[in-house]
Length: 433
Image 1 (tube, helix red, strand yellow):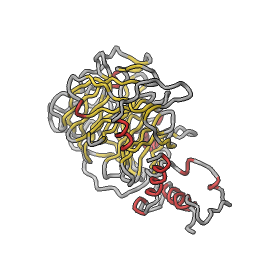
Image 2: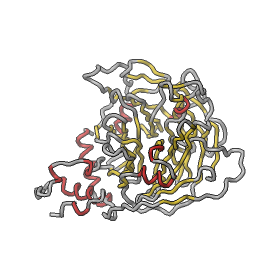
Image 3: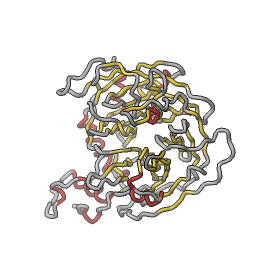
Image 4: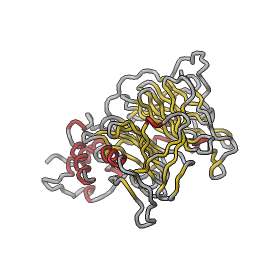
């Protein structure tokens, strides 16, 4: 399928009645609460949470949080919550709300990761709270679409822990001041009783994939990873995977992973055995000078898609069938032609999601994103339609002027009506013809 045909089909799916939100009313109230837990039961598997970084949900009630300072993974049991009604995140200064809930200065917050609890319409966010020259304190909060912030008490939350193992030593640094151990876990994915953990180890081939059984039973199986990087024109064994998803490619469960600057690779899950050294297949190069910040898989009614967002450039949208086709080819083994031809291999659809800091599936129809407001610097928590992949209120264009009139058959009228309503501007939505 061509990129243009794919976009048209996604747009049609986004405008179908089944994907419309049940209410167009804006939800702006901001509240604060504390999420309480019972005391942790005595267990040799429980450990103190010293940092809260990358995370993923095992199921609706179990959140795994990476703790590089403590050298652990913590599987936190969350209290049951009722299913959340579909809603839209329109929180344009969630950093201020979180700071009030944590009783800290907003400037002391560092946002680490975000994941949406399945079925809840609630985003969970890990943070570090700076203490001047001291060690930052970890924090975990839950934010719903109304803006209510609930603090998860990490000291009392029931959890079990497992050591990460092979963590880079405290004397190892990147850019002088960044501990290499901070990249022990860069991303996680769960499938069929296995937790796949990307990041760094202390081995000479530092790029590692750890595979844990869940529930946690023993130490991880650890495989080292190498890949060909077309921008650098070299085989690389140090830089870690930054974002990944698990997709079925031609019937084979496969890790689809992105590295900084920005090669895309595939690794069959069956190859990830303890002590293995894996040569990942590079199937695409999406250009230099950017880091992957989000990677999600979804089906908006047009077949499975993978969306990869970057720190410094537009996002890449790919059909899983195209990734599968690319994985059957020999792979990319030659450098790009810098700077005139920055991409190679699998072709993607460019979509306007630059500036996103963290991304996750919110529900079947929506994505949730953390991003910085360019004018104020505040962290925003917003939703976006999967079929359209933009926020209409981010832009001022011809459609926004009071004297503009849609033509009777303008295909964008319905899309604009839906997006303006989603984003809290129902009064500015164009009337039905």
